Image (cartoon, rainbow, N blue to C red):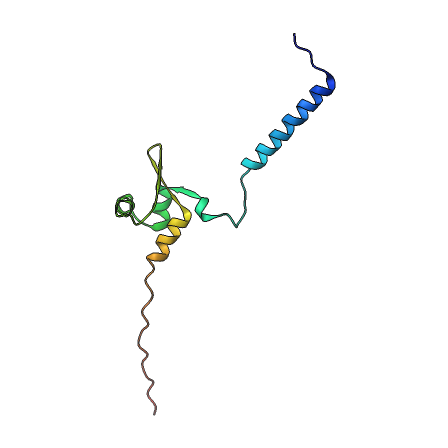
Length: 105
């Protein structure tokens, strides 16, 4: 049988509570709108949805070195900032239509 002094026990429980609270704060999901896009990872399916492309197109982009990615346990991940970069790089500016001069009577 192990015995422990009451004060030592209370101090130990206090330290455990502090560690628990720290871990809880570190792993709590945040609704922070200033979340860094370079730290947000999305999987292949989410990337296909955001980019509106097929899985084969994403494979081609990876093979051509046009998008950086990370593979973990046979699953491909991309950073949100990389998806944004790819979207902005693919934007085609609208062509302005010629104006038709108005006729004066």
